[in-house]
Structure formats: C-alpha cells, structure tokens
Image (tube, rainbow, N blue to C red):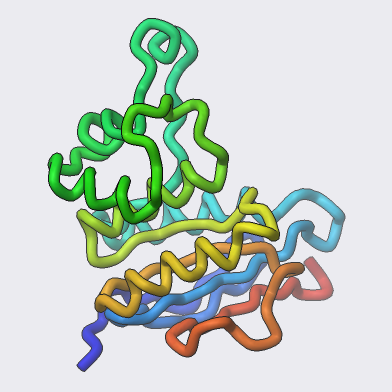
Length: 193
C-alpha cells in the first residue's frame, strides 16, 4: 500500500494556478513548467525555485537534489573529490558512498569540479535518495542524450518505494511518460496573465 508523503493544496503563485496533488511512496510527480510567461519574461526555473521553497516550507524534510557549488577559493586550496563530496558534503557513510560510486561507475578520486553537469546531478540525486524517502529535483540543464539515463536512475529509486517531485520544461513534456509510476502535471498560463 502506498503511503502519502506530501500533499499540496491548489494555490496560485504569480497568477499561475498550481493544482492539488498528492505524492505517495513509490511514485513521482513530474511538474512541467513553461519557459516564459505571457509577457515573454523568463518563468521556468524561476518558478521552479519558488515552488521548491514553498514545498520545503510545507515539509521540511523534502530536500532539493541540486548540484553543489564549491567556492573558487576552497576548490583551489582543497578540491573536493567524488568520495569527499559524498562523505563530507552529503554526509553519506563510507559503505553507502562506495556503493553510489560503484553504481554510477565514477572514480572516487576524481575532482568533483571535473564531473559533467549530468554526473553531478546524478550524484546529488543518488545521495539524497540514500538519506531520504522523498526528494525534490529538477531536470533543468540535463542534456537530451542524458535524460533517459537520469530518468532510469530516478525510476530505480521510485521502484524501491521512494518518491520525488521533479520539475522540467513544458516544451520537453512526454506524450506518454516513460514509466507508469509518473504522474505528469502540466502548468499552463491563463490568457489574461
């Protein structure tokens, strides 16, 4: 039986209606957001950040699996490796750290800053799923050639009973989601906004 992990009531933000939904264990809500509003002002990632903040205010143990930014000075003096990123930054124990590194086929001694954007994103997602039953994540910036790999990794976690809310560009919405445990929500703009 699926248990509810997060419930969102219908609300409006910046003139945009966000529908009611319920996130349950073993499922994924994929929220597609248009890139621009009706006045051709950027909307996609900006609205994603606002929604993430709002959802985290509702449920404080709902982390966002975003890429880590190490400041230039510390990256120069003490560069993070993949292994140190997992242990020191993400607070993953050694056994689980090695398991993630093996599963993603990464070099534990590789400098974190040298990882591709997609590998950083995947590493953050795996680390957050290792510590949490539910997470927030976004597919912004993920290349077209890598999205299927990332979706498969996320789906593997969902099949373990985990859950996630994913944000993505509306222009990349699937006609049919790649996995049956995904519930898509397409945010559309009101004509008068």
